[in-house]
Image (cartoon, rainbow, N blue to C red):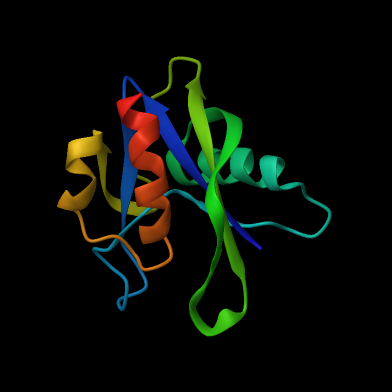
Length: 127
């Protein structure tokens, strides 16, 4: 199981460009990662956002459905999230970060697993 965070602030969502591995470098994703054994999906997201972006988040509702990952070995689940505290996302594991409004969502090359979530996210950003 892989979880991702659609971190929303001021009507924009945080998009992160992968730095590695080479086959996906430069492609965009929502931050997150694997759920460890014994860890809840929410706890995994809080941990991953701290590790990848040096921020604390409060996890909200699911966005979109389960997305099968490449090779069918795992499923991606995306949750909305909001930043908690004064820290702003930092480049730790990613090559670039961008805050995207609804009209900007198609301006980056999303990873295939994240694309279906982008469509589900658009109405949340325009609400």
